[in-house]
Image (tube, rainbow over all chains, first blue to last red; front, side):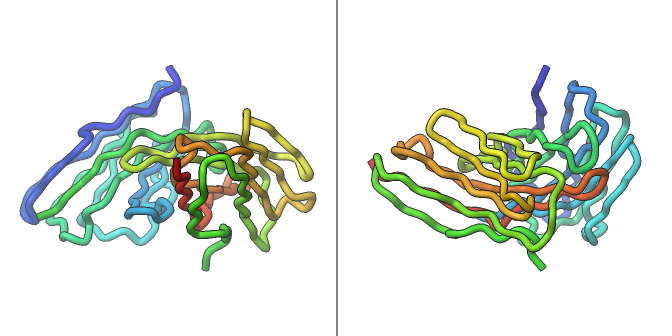
Length: 112
Length: 110
């Protein structure tokens, strides 16, 4: 299995909602990542997990909360988001930090 | 500060033309990747280069890693509409963080 899967594909939420994005990989990769991407811009790194421990947090607002329940799963919990948080959220994994990354298809998030 | 600068930022060409995208940095990377991303989808890995001066070919795409491992280029021969997308270079330092370039948006007109 050489895939990174993400659910849901699309998500529309209000500013008072709580939702979660999910990511899964079965390639045995030990590093997993969350990125935020606006149209025609490069992905912006949000969080990095290495061996299930949070390795990098790029000064992301606390309304985004990552979780790594095990080596195959990565979640991003969302609460009290703002309209400017609307974007494509990408999950990726790699064998180790700074190795080539494999991306999921993304979750298109719209905050109303 | 952007570690990896890509040029051009936008490119619109006719089908059948050739093009080159550049990825430049003042930093030395242990490896460099090129990705292509279509709208609404995740980036797809095209190639990884690790050796200075390395050249890799993928059908009509030719990738080169600079001798000093600070820059790279992607050359597309006889572009097709299916080549349309956002091209991203990315560099990594072993055991450390991974940096994306500024991106090149390519449109190939039939």
